[in-house]
Amino acid sequence: MIYRMAVQTEKLRERPTGDIILETKEIVKRFGGVIALAGVSVKIPRKWIVLLIGPNGSGKTTLVNVITGFLKPEEGKVIYEGKDITGIEPHIITKMGIVRTFQIPKPFINLTVLENLLAAYPPGPHENPYKAASKKSWINTEKKAVERAFDILKTLGMERIWNQKASELSGAELKLLEAGRALMSGAKLIIMDEPAAGVNPTKAHEIFSVIRRLREERGITFLIIEHRIDIAAQYVDYAYALHLGRLISQGSPQKVLNDKAVIESYIGS
Image 1 (cartoon, rainbow, N blue to C red):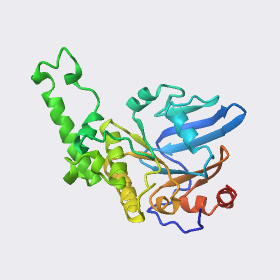
Image 2: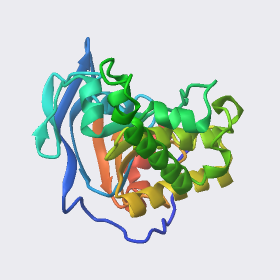
Image 3: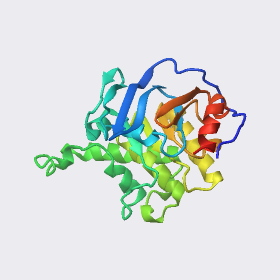
Image 4: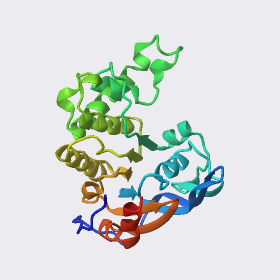
């Protein structure tokens, strides 16, 4: 359910401005006779936290799948840092700095928090069979990886549980671990699918507070799909609303959540 509300944020954004890190231009995606996306255009400025909302079946996940290369659109383009990345393989897009997390976290459950982060670190000399035998060729890389991991854990507030297995973490901690793995891989833009799903309101606020901290301290850009919009809207800079594959509203969280078309899309879904 969506509620009329007055959203308090540090700065209400009226339109995407400045350095645009990601843009979709008139994206069209069909599945047989069903039009999942009907000319969707969005802009995501660098270092902004952007919210993507809409009832089930509105096209949110399809749009993310197009952005991340899992689906190729019939029409339109995805522009990332000024380059056309439409239809590029997902693993290449990840290397370019666009990393997504999922509603249900998928860590290596038998590895520790630290080991999960290290597993996401880009390949180093130790993985080269010709260099692995020489410790001098990779020891500095491994040291930097561990230092980076602990630095990220500190930002996430998870440094005290670095040696805890992922299988022992709470739902909120697993969501933060996913964000940490994205950071370890070199993410510039993190796309998060319902980071507040399955956690209590207090923990949900903690997760979004960490997201804000990552934006402020590390300059990370976020695109977030979230159904708990009453919580998410308090932390984001800008919002887009989809319904039946079409963009029906955009602007400050306050504007979008009070938009009659958005409210009707939820009531009628």
